[in-house]
Image (spheres, helix red, strand yellow):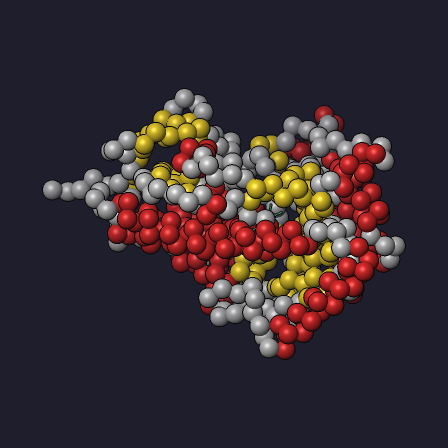
Amino acid sequence: MQQKIPIVIITGAGLGGLSFYHALIKNKDKKEFNVKIFERESGPQGIETNIFHKKNFHVNSLFPTLSILKKDRWQGYHISINNFGARSLVNCLPSSVASNLPKAMPNPIPDVERHGFSLSDHTGCLLLKPPSKLAKDVYGVANASGSSEIITYRDRLRDVLLENVPVQWGKKCIGYEETEKGVWVFFEDASKEFCDILVGADGINSPVRKRKIPELQIFDFGITQINADVAIPKSLIVRLIKIIGNSLSQKTIGLNGDVILIIYRLIPIEQEQEQKDKCEPHYRVTLIFNYPTKLDDNVESDKIKVDDNDPASVIDHVKYMIRKLRPECEFTNILLELWSLVPRTAPDPKNYLFKTYNPVQRRQIRDIDPLSVNVWTSSRVTLLGDAAHAMSPVLGLGTNNAIKDAEVLSQALLNYSPENYISCIKEYENEMLKRTSADVLRARSSTLKQSSPVGYFGSIFRNNYMKTVNFIMNTFYYDYFSRK
Ligand SMILES: Cc1cc2nc3c(=O)[nH]c(=O)nc-3n(C[C@H](O)[C@H](O)[C@H](O)COP(=O)(O)OP(=O)(O)OC[C@H]3O[C@@H](n4cnc5c(N)ncnc54)[C@H](O)[C@@H]3O)c2cc1C
């Protein structure tokens, strides 16, 4: 008798959920599933922004390719995909999708770009630059035995992963009910779907997680994060590189727990000829500013008004904090200039070099340690990516782990049968919990250390310690950050 094809439902079409979708389809010769993927966002490009001034509407229609789309949420323009994330990504994707990866992760430019991370102090003086192997392309990163990474356009990676995937948009999952025969998944629009296996890949606020493991608590760091995507002129990036070098992921730590991360590629933004004639080449840069939330109390007492619905006030707030926390020097001037270039209101699409715009806002850094509860009862319902183990972004491990989850779960499901599905899910969860809990705690510890105020004398000790670690790492090629 022919067996019925089992149905797998994925809630969440983020980088983790989409990688998992492809991996199941890629393996369909070995084990066939009927895979359905549901996403709460209204469409692949988010929603067209309605915050343009009326006078700009004609510009919008004259330049349709330049119209700006406001994503339903901030996706972040650059992320680092490391060797284990790249390996899992390549393993999950069919060759037809993998061949499009260079659109999202263009090959590193030899002698120009250093795809690696470096850390400097509040004046831009180098403290740590761990060894990183320069790869030729994403396959080189995937095959690297030591630390290697590729700075990736995050939203383009999602676009590549979305191609030919029949995502059901506008379907916000609100819960599920597990029965002996399967799982009913419920959506906000009052519809419901039945499946054999439910995979919650629906991010940090996952309703699937809240139902499956309600005891799992979100840990709040007490650290505020402000992110922005900005197009910066070549002359400014040249000044920046002169001070802190050409690592594409640059972090600077201050004396008061303030940390600024700058991530970019040295690939100029495509411009229309008219724009090329008018201005110098520009690069896309992602800026991330972290500081202990309690510092906001002083800001309030300084009578600065920050309104998270008013991006201009948030940008002014960042600049105020930088002036207050950083010394007067060229490096601080560059940081201020970078933040001055962040759009204060919805930009004019004719001149805006990014395709998407998200107003800057203050957010709190949070994580979830999946092993902070003792019992994870394996069932037809499981979790993948941030839904299970959101982690602080400081070590750049969240997406890498989400994609690794997708690979491990798809492999475990190759042995699926109606009798042994629990053991497949258990095999995945055992590996996932151990791997990701360690990374959540590692990222948490780094975040808390970096964000602890040290003061002037403390910084002398910290900086010398970092420089010693740097010496050891580079002399003995000690690979703290790599994973086999
Ligand atoms: C500033 C910053 C920098 C980062 N840098 C890096 C980096 O360099 N390297 C790295 O590896 N990671 C990085 N990360 C982490 C990374 O962004 C996340 O770990 C990654 O996005 C997790 O992928 P995911 O698919 O699990 O979740 P998400 O990307 O959150 O996707 C979840 C999807 O589910 C959808 N969804 C949510 N709720 C529902 C619902 N109820 N029903 C249906 N759909 C729903 C969402 O709309 C979304 O599309 C960074 C994060 C931040 C904030």
